[in-house]
Length: 104
Image (cartoon, rainbow, N blue to C red; front, side, top):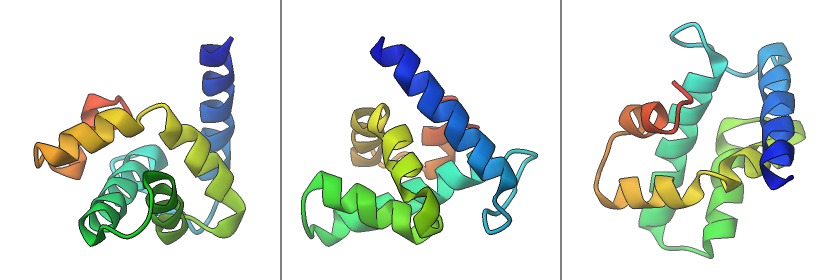
């Protein structure tokens, strides 16, 4: 059931990304650019060391998407956060991380 809810959240997020004019497009997919932007912003948040992981995710989502999409960002990232953190610790580039989690 949790996987289904995650899939529904992901699909809703994809729809909102596709219709949002303020979300940059790259490589034919808004998801890819969004993911790369999020991972870069999240990496900066981790390096700043300020706050909890949840607060860092919230600030990174806020940095790359309009406020109206922030909850969708947080919901989408929730399923990938452990992988993203681990890969950032290994100093993988945002592009590699996003490919690894199948958003690029």
